[in-house]
Length: 83
Image (cartoon, rainbow, N blue to C red; front, side, top):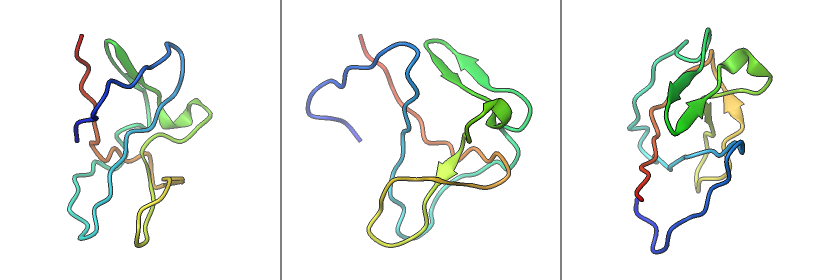
């Protein structure tokens, strides 16, 4: 997905990148965020145990904000930064 205009981000702020998959077509690695986070500058994905869940999802029709988590799973939704 490409946005029509750039989206400003602020350092030190947590953002969630998500998408709607009505036919459950997604990739997942259970336990990916269990031990440590991932640092891939300029992004940092915190470990699930860091105080808030990482690897969130939402089941249901029509989409919505993802708030559920399952065993520190990474669902491989990613972002691209351009400068």
